[in-house]
Image (cartoon, rainbow, N blue to C red; front, side, top):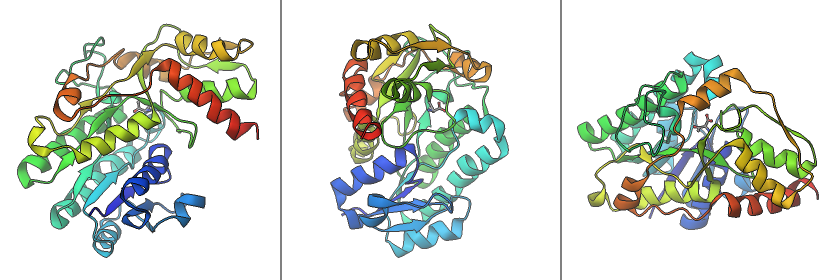
Length: 318
Ligand code: AKB
């Protein structure tokens, strides 16, 4: 039996991950952790337990872990890449001081911990094509610095204290449920909203800039499947490359145009987003995740676009 705590349960990934975990493990066994000002509402609040859980407050987390007898923590508290550049100290406080708090509590209470890393953990001198699992990681953003530290600190707790830490490097995640906020890959979500609303899309990323992306159902499966994987088969523990599709703005635009032929896109490149995007991989080699725990994505650009347009139309044009 699992007792799970999702920290950051009202965010882009957290809101859907909490729902999926409740489906698989039972509503009452998954606690939706939130911070003041981002309380769960609707189904997330009503279907199962929730608790205030601020990663910067170790006593608060420890009390929640003990009260609910938690054995697995999904730690999704983080600032995304663009917003982190504006608030580097806060990004570190949440991402790293917060992670330290969680790892200490996990050590004391024997919890497994999932803390996502990102394609942002790579930098300009990482090989950009089919980026290998183990390669140069010298990012130039505070987001990247904190993600490399996340991987290393999680590995350290695994080796030194035997805490069962695991993580993947998420690409840009695309979903129609909760919008992301402050990321470099957000354009690949925003473009679908414009297409469905019948508005022209102003793209902040230059034509030809490739980035890895993933549809939310695959991202959720990756997190849960890795946490369920047989530990004896894992050679890596943290920072698994996972990949399903890689495209530039023209490719996603042209895919949407197959269903929305009148859709228009123009460019107004944001220099910060563009410089971050250029420093990230064009495509990742995820063969270690496939070999060690059976990672296999379901969606490509075409099937994701059909599903996104269908669900967003239902949501926005009711
Ligand atoms: C971001 O753009 O900051 C995130 C990420 C790829 O980690 N979506």
